[in-house]
Each structure stands twice: as C-alpha cells, then as structure tokens.
Length: 412
Image 1 (cartoon, rainbow, N blue to C red):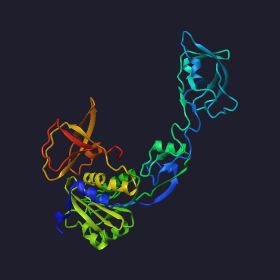
Image 2 (image 1 turned 60 degrees about the vertical axis):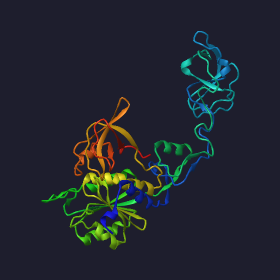
Image 3 (image 1 turned 45 degrees about the vertical axis):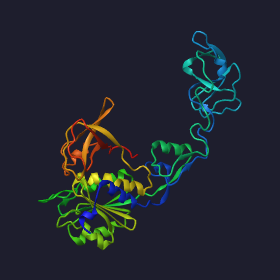
Image 4 (image 1 turned 135 degrees about the horizontal axis):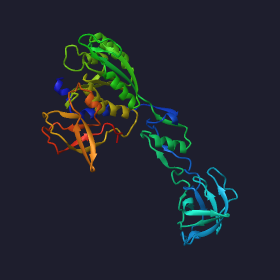
C-alpha cells in the first residue's frame, strides 16, 4: 500500500479512531473519588430532596393571608408561638390565624403555615412580631422534592461527574457509584538524541519533554499514565519496549514515525500484529502521525516535535481516551472569532495555529501567540485556543472571521 493511501484528513483521522474504540468495563468506587469519572449507569433517586417542605430564609412561618395590607406605616402584628431551628422537630408546633413561628433556613415548615417572611421585613417585640410587607402564598417556601423527586433520573450513563454531581450523589445518600474503568496508557519516547530529566546532555542531544507533556495530559483526562522511558534507535529496542507497552489499553509513542533512516516505530508494527489505519494526517503541525490497533489496544505514533505532539494528542488521543471511559461529550467547543492579524498558508493541509482569544465589547478576538514552529512549546504554553484554518484556505486577512477550538474548556 502506498503512503498516499494512508494519508487522511483531520476529520477522517478522528472518525477512524473513534470507530475503533470499544468502551471499557466498570468498577464501583466511593463517591468521594468519583470526580471527573464517567458514569456506567443512570443514577435514579429513591429519595425526595428536600425530604420535607422547608424554609428558604431565616424569618417567621406565617399564613400569607395574615399579612394582607402590611406596610412599614401600617404593620400587621401576630403572636409568636415558638421557634424551629434547622434540624429541629416540628412535632406539636403549628401556625394558626394570627400566630407565627420563628424559623431558620432549612428548618421544616410547621403545619398550618404557607409562607415565610424574612427577618428583614419584621420587628419583634414583647412576644409579637410586626410584619412590614405582604407575602404571597409559598413565598420563601421550598417544597419536598423540589430539587429531586423519588424516581427521577438525576445523572445519566456517560455523564462525566463534576463537583455539583458529587453533591447530588451526597443528597441521595449514594456513597458508592458505578463508573467506567480508567484506561491505562503507556508512554514511550524514541530517539538517541533525547536525554531524560536529571541526565547530562551530550553533544547533539536535547531534553526529553514530550513524555512529561503527555503524562500530564493523560492525567488531566483521568486515565492512568505509565512512562516507559526512552527507547534507543534500534529495531530490537523499539520492538522490545512496544511488546511491554501493548499490555496497556493505549500506547502513545513520540518520534520515530517519519521518513528518517532511524525511524523504526512503523517498521515494528507488522511484526507485533498492529493493524495500521493511517500514517499521515493532512495537518500542520502533526503530519507524521500514525494510528493502529492490536486487539482492543489503541496505538498512537505521534510526531516528535513538542507542539506537534501536544496538538495531535488534543485532536486524536484525548477524544479516544474519553470514549474509552464511556463519555458522551468528547468535542472541544468551537466558536467564531475575529482575526487580529494576517495569516498566510499553503493549500492542502489544515493548520492548527496556537492562539489566544479575548472578549471585548461582546465580540471574540484572536491572535497567534508568536513563533508557530512546531518545536516552540512556549507559544503553546501561552495559547488558550487553536486557530483552525481549513485545507482549502490560503490567505486570511485581519478582521475576517475564523474558527477557534477552545482547548482549555471542558468538552461539549
């Protein structure tokens, strides 16, 4: 098969990858450890939240009709017959015409009362309360089940749990939850030119940074990274480390996938039974990017330049990890922005330019973050978006609308 047959567009690459993903199995974990995990099943409530009608304010439980005509100049005066604090019992406490019960936020509404007037609109004296404003029926009144009713599907399979979701689990007394398993991810750096952290850099070497960029990205998306180290540029060493890495759910290597004499990654795929689906993507940065599969293990061969590695991860590996964990929302948000500088490019490849967007006068503006060479990670550090220039586009003038992908935002 010719190389051209294994060259795909960005969208084709994404489609091929996601069509290859089989979601992982489940595990039951404590809800305290469930932040950012993906639900394996719907969560249906067997309780009412709140369990009883309660007060939304500190004030007095009253009958709304008793407050008719009340004003600062002409207050209504009713007798106080008791007090209910949050968590207190309402047994034997009720409100009848001309009476009120002092009540705290979250306390159960006593029998007979149909509204609560806040302290700020009252004044207490000699066992009575003067009410300075009318209240409508059910004012400051929270109904049983107002937040969650028994039988409600509160959270759905495929939801990625956020902080509010953890609170909802607590409200339903769910101390454990069934979630998708987290994928294990082996990370391999290739190349004799790499020196690892703490090692002395010899002539012709550079520091290995891709592994640590990827390690943090894998953790960010709640998968389990395993750094396998740097593999030397020999066929045997490359094959040996991949044999170990293939025990993971996902393998990510960086470098060794282009046309160099010592790029061995693609050479060892056939011997290891890795079925390659593409070898090149029509995108800059990140053209030499491979994807294959052995059984259910996904194998990504990312380019060696730091920005190419990171942008390729964002476009291709990230959604695959989320889909492995059963997530339904896997796309980064995409919006239109006004370009603040001229951009020139050759046709035939999509460009993903590092950009920084700002919002001014309710409009989104975007500019590049400086040097766009794929070796300059500093410009990626300064970016909060990628400016997406389609394959067919060439020159774009300042003031034109462009599409930007918001890389720091949650998936939609």
